[in-house]
Length: 288
Image 1 (tube, rainbow, N blue to C red):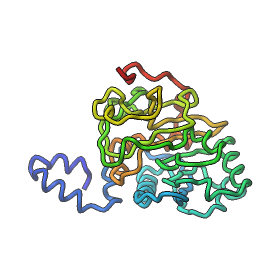
Image 2: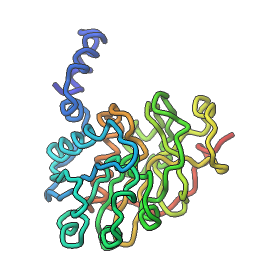
Image 3: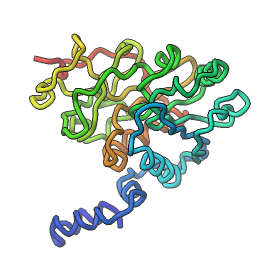
């Protein structure tokens, strides 16, 4: 049963019944129920999902794979190859894919030690490949990988058990304009702070709301108070979308995050053209 129907029945059934029903749903059903309605793609793209961590292992890796499978099936955007075999990054193999989803693969530099594979990945993106990076895909890497992604994990003062205020910094941008109607929102998740991040190198879409009282109780390490959480960028001819969200399982079937992620995939696959030029941090999200 679709979420919209559940919501319509909520006054009749009562919240307890609704909550119990949602709790009994499978993760695949939850993703399906919360996906946005999108026009079916004419072309079905090929995506490689690489999820192997070489550091901390997130327990949301499996639901990340479920989300990708269901999203591909429901939108018609892509088919997914799930593999942790590094040979997929060899030049003769990586060219089979239109994009790569790095799904919580912490410290990839510890696994991809072969310089030839590293060069192959970077060349693939520079020559037009797509990258969709989820959460700890930004934790680690070698210099060219970090430059491609746009940031490198430094810490998470805003932890997984908290509910934080998120600012939609670019509410007219096609990837996030429909997320909470272009407005800010609250989210329970672990939110990263980045080294090697420069707003001038990417288009920031979402960031921590630095005027929020609850957010302000945790001191971040950046003097500029610039805590970006989602962005897009060009890397050579390639397209990159980065989401700091994705530590907690519930994020993978959050309807507002799924809206952003579907549009993020449409961008990296070349289905849409969006602005990637950097813009200044908006005045409404500057700290007091």
